[in-house]
Amino acid sequence: MPRYHIWTIGCQMNKAESERLASRLEGLGYEEAASAGEADVIVVNSCVVRQSAENRVRGKLRELQRLKKQRPGILVAVTGCFVDEEVSRLKEKYPFVDHFFRAGDDPPWLEKPPAPVLPRISPRVYVPIIQGCDNFCTYCIVPYRRGRERSRTLGEIVCEVEALAGRGVKEVILLGQNVDSYGHDLPRKPDLADLLVKLNEIPGIERLRFLTNHPKDMSDKLIRAMASLDRVCEQISLPVQSGSDPVLKAMGRGYTAGQYRDLVHRIRGAVPGVAISTDVIVGFPGETEKDFQATLDLLNEL
Image: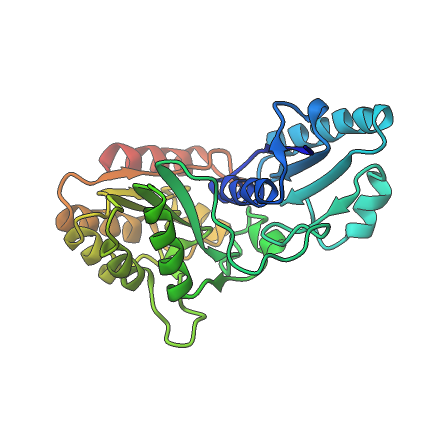
């Protein structure tokens, strides 16, 4: 029986895509190998959002280059945000890699499946609902690697979650680089709140979560849905990145610290006891001690 190994680094979207690729390979008769050295097919699902992640990816590729010399018959593929439009450049630099394919694309050596591929089943499953991002924050590579926003249809997502529930899944985490933008590119423009209402009705699903939110795009309608739907967990991932308006402007975030503060108060007013987590970038180019203190002050306040 042929064996596969998938090495994954980075965001939850990468993890979700690796789970689906694993499920697809197993459906074709592959067995998971404990390490790359034992595998016939090796996939690197990469991340370059941070330098440390990119360094690890390059280190893994050096390992696989040595392995390929020892075992020329293995198939090595690379996906994720390390892969850009200049595939010819990558092939020239890494000639031992058999296939490069963009994040979210189908593996080119496998036939396209006739239906959506479900991830390997566990009690908790990631479900991507929108790919790409239209925000173009100045520090972020996602729009250049994953492209502009593309939503899956509401019906497709509902069918997938129903199938997952039928196989014993209890918790579903909806994923998007900007999950609040879901549906704006679809014909009838359903939004995330509409999707949550539909998923909340599916028997067997006990917990619904969604991430990551963008403060400028999170609507009051979504907040009301979270407050009223019994299976939607009272938890929000809401990256602020900075408490300084000049830094937020330089980042291209599209909101002020005051608007972020007001949004947090609206969420807490509608959902008492809600758990809110955030992300912060420290040392953004041009950040002063005053800017840094503004971030500390906002975090202390909220």
